View 1 (cartoon, rainbow, N blue to C red):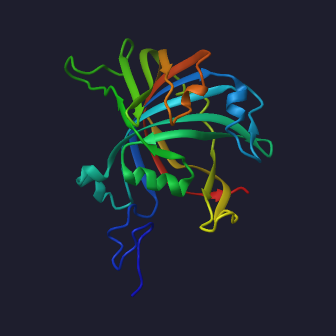
View 2 (tube, rainbow, N blue to C red):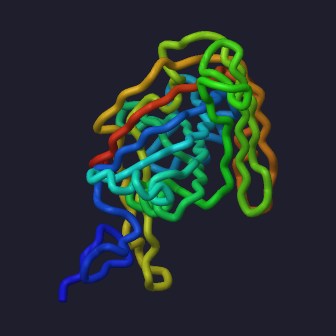
Length: 261
């Protein structure tokens, strides 16, 4: 009998597969802090054939996202444990064949299906504990997406806090930053099962949103702290200068990419 499923476990029905096939739809709240670090620390995270961006090569974005996601059927939305997750990801910019790309160099999520999607897309996802303040239009227990709204965010992994931020919104913005504003250049990598063998998969890919819509972006002021941890290297991208901070609600569709090298 044939087995089915987009990713393991593949079964006779495919129902147990960790993730369904694309397209994948995302709706979420993004809290972004952009800052500058030592460009050499960014460069050492860019494997060949990538090189640092020509302009502002030390620019970094750390982004907290509170997501609800689903496949084309939308069935996950009625079983929310399969739809809701949080993540924190770190983005830099790079250059390939004269074009500027964004690249996720670190990312933590709190659900296994999000890790599985990362394996397919080339995102280097790990498990973490991610929290961010949620907005709400009523009551005193939530900020508004408006001037004066204050949002906190934290990231931890393996029982260690890795990052924390506080953003105070000031005014509407034309965008939610520039570091994560390009197509993504990621590596899909899988070592050989044979000791010393060539990688079973090693390819540079481009991907991005096949559909995008968003609400009004807001900019503001940020405090950001990064912390050392035994098995993490985020703190090496130390904060030298805050560029800006942003809050935006977005809707995204992801439906594949293309091989670059």
